[in-house]
Structure formats: C-alpha cells, structure tokens
Image (cartoon, rainbow, N blue to C red; front, side, top):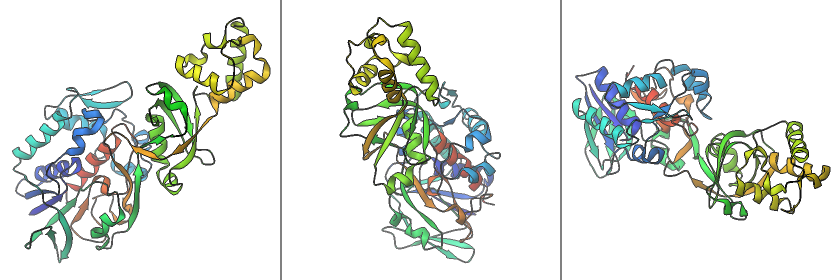
Length: 403
C-alpha cells in the first residue's frame, strides 16, 4: 500500500507515524511545500511547544473548541490528552503540566518534540520530501493521483491524508473544493486586540490574573488572565474571546468594543459592598493608598485617573456617587478595539473543510474515497493552551488507521 501525507507539520508527522505503525509494510511519504518541516511546532508556546492540555475530562476538553466541539467529543475517547502523555513519554519525551494546565516537554524546548518526530520517521523509514507542493488531487477509481508544482509526472497512491493546516484564504482550499468538499470560509482565530486610541497601552506588561471579558451586544464572554501590551490587550481571557468570537469579529472588520471586568466578580452588589466596606475600614487613607481586590498598583492609579477622581481623595470622601463610579469601572470598563494582531507566531484559523464533508469515525472524506483529513485543514480550532495540537494528534491517530 502506498500512502501520501500532504503537509509536514504536527498533524502530518503524527499521521504518517500512525500509518506506518498500523501498516508496517506500507510505503509512506510526507510532502511538505516549504523547505522546513514542523515549523509551527518550533515556535509554539514561545519555543517550548504546548503539546496538549492537562484536562482529562472529555466534556471539559471538548468545551475548549469553538468549532468542532461535538465532532471531537465523539472521537476523544479513542485518543485524548492521556493518550498524548503516554505517546510522548513512551518515546523518551517526559512531559510536565503547569498550574494553568498547559503541558510542555520537561526540557521546556520544542526541539525535544521535533527530535522525537524525526527519530520516529527515521526509525519507521518514512520518506520526507520538502519543497514539494501538491497542487491537485484526482480520483482514479480506487486510487488517488497527486499533481506537484513543477513536476510533470503524476504520483499515484492508494491512500492520501491531507494535513496542510489552516489556509488564510478560501482560494487556498480550491483544490479540495474541486473534489466536492464543502468549504467554510476561513477567518483568523486566536488573536490579540489592538487599541491604538486607548492610553491603557501605557500600562504594557501588567497582568491581571482573574478577569471577565465580554463583547457588548453579544453573548461572547471569556475569563482568565489578561495581559496589557504596548498595542492593546492579550492573555488567555482575550485570546479565548477572539476564538469564540472569530467569525463575528471578522464581520465587524475588527472594530468593536470590549468590556473588562477587572475583579472577576459578576455580582455588582457584592463588589459595591466590598468597596463600601473599604471606604469605612480605610476611611482616612487616600484612595491611591489602598488597592481594592489586590489590583496591580499601576492599574489602580490608572483607573483612578480614568474616573477623574483626585488621588488625594480619601476613601471616606467618596460618597455614594464615588463608590458607584469605582464599582462601575471595576466591573464594566469599556475599550475600543481597532484591529488585531496574530498571537505570537501561532496563526490559527476558524474555517476550512466543513465537518459535514468528513466521516468523524475515520476522518475519511465523504466525497472522495481513500482521502483523509487531520488537523486544522478541517473546520476545527481550539483556544490557547495546547488544544489545537491535541486536535491534530487525535484526528491524525484516527486518520492513520486508514479505515
């Protein structure tokens, strides 16, 4: 049996290894259009490679995917985060789970993952060809023919796995649309918010560990740490919001408002009671000298200025109006977003080959026999925290069975 894997990234390598372990006598070749394999693995997690999540509950794991949640929920029992741990550790790559449930190689270096894949590919005698771009797939009875850029000869295979990752443009998926696959137009997911007109950027570097963020006028809501950057806002709270709101925010052309709850408290009355108690217990202190909810010092001073309150004002002098002002800005601080920035080097898309075109038990195409899919080429994407890699491992493991 001759098998081609299109794409030399995480999903492609994992799928090729799975095929060869399931079918030791098969001829397996990986085609990568660029001159470098596993490029995204290299930069993931700031160069440490966030390989998966420490979450083991299938329900909680599935909830981390704005697109593909139901699809993955059915297949995670077959290969999930626990299996990922076993897979890497059995191949000499110990993993560690951080407090935030992100999982990295113990070496804290993505090269450990890359070396593992290359070692496995060499051990299993899988051919890896870089600089080979597949332009077209044709169905020839039970077999599939591949046309490569710059090559006249046609390559014929019994099975083909597509693992090319997300495409930034819909036109990049035309070669799959020609095979009658339904395509969901791709838009960016996992991005940070640009705020060129907001002076909150003067606080760059500040992290607030627990926040709630929402997009006013929608049901979009997120929580977690928020990082203020020199261009706007980032951190898990913002990145999750960008992922779940990817299509809506694209329709808004990335001009919208974001509401920040700095204190992670949704009960307005409870926050008001806390501020009222502070005004009584610390009545003679200046408001700058007591930070509610242990907010970062620079952020609290910024919010005081934002409220047009005098830093010399004492807590006892606030009155009901002043207390309401503080409660409102702590729970309902609004900023104008104009534009986005890709999160680090990790480009993630919402969209791709529609899941309606794919058999979720096998990852085989519903319109083209012996063609399989894995990873982000499908309309599946997760929030930050190792979830996109986990989707790649799971779908590659199943595609590699070639059922």
